[in-house]
Amino acid sequence: MRKTGHYESLGNTKYFIPDPLPPQNPPLSLDRQTMTLFGEAMHHLGKLNEMANRLPDIKRFIKAYVTKEALLSSAIEGVHTTMLDVFTQPLLDVRPSKNTQLVMNYTQALDTAINMIKKEGIPISNRVILAAHKTLMQEGEGDKADPGHYRKQPVKVGNLVPPPPNYIPELMSHLEQFINTDDSLPPLIKAGLAHIQFETIHPFLDGNGRIGRLLIVLMFVDSQLLSEPILYPSYYFKKHHLEYYRLLDRIRTDGDFEDWITFYLKAIKGSCIDAAARAKDIETLEQQLTKLIEKRYTKTRDTRLRALSVIFSFPVININELANQLDVAFNTANQIISDFVELGILVEETKQKRGKLFKFKPYLEILEKEYID
Image (tube, rainbow, N blue to C red; front, side, top):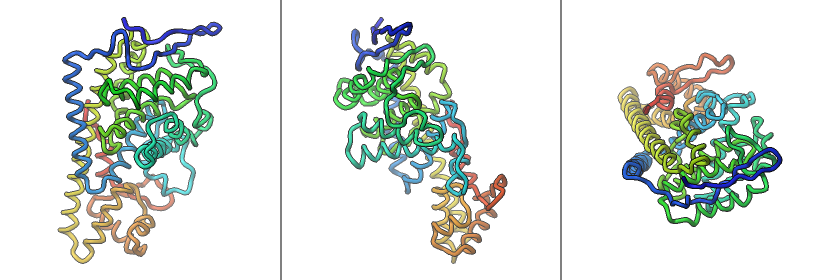
């Protein structure tokens, strides 16, 4: 049985302090079955990258995928809202609900971290993690969790009592070194180990799960396993959450990193298959609707094709927003929406009492569909 850390007693409480990564005594040992799974996960990551590079407007797809991951990752923490609520919020004059705000914060946190890594060239570090946490917890009652700072008080998570606050800076420094300087393991495996180490350290008062899952995506982008953050491992983690927490405990109690890696690779493989299938269906939907518009309209075809592109970015929209995006008159935008409603592309959102909203129903159905078990 591998030793993965030690306990330290303060008063009546025993705190678990994890050893630095990578696993030692013995080193991580992956059997043939797990290595086969590793190869399959790498294969599907490659296919997902190919799909992403083929999409005509990657930014709007990133927005959809990040929103999906934000919803799933937040739901694991008991923060529940809907995709429709998130896409509708920018069009409303009222403040979002606490849960909708927290999900919107997640998308901004990922943007913040990705920009620091890709545009500013900052390695994945305490600086990036703290900036992401500050953005994640900035509003929606997250501000009670001391945004952008490591916790200064003890916490308990299930059966685990994570390290006392005074240990956190050193433990996070070790994790930063592992992420950026250790070349003993493939990046895909490193991301799985870094995630579970982060969760064991539990450095924040709140938001640890969301930042820990975000860390996986950041490491994939940073190591160029993915060109864009279009993966949502939270889908698999949420579906198998009891197994997830059981395996986290087993690392502490039995030193069993190997079983965790097997579970994690299944999550990545399944998430890649899901994302690629979803992207393919979105690509097919756009092709079908483009042909429908080209067949139906002649003089106004170009404007309506531009409008189709807009609603892929704004799957919930009103007349004013469409007019602004297309730079056309209100009456022109109104006619386009009427045409799209007639074609079944848009559906009026009847729950809205003031100001008509229209949802891009076939697109939202693809985003919300379940593709894998």
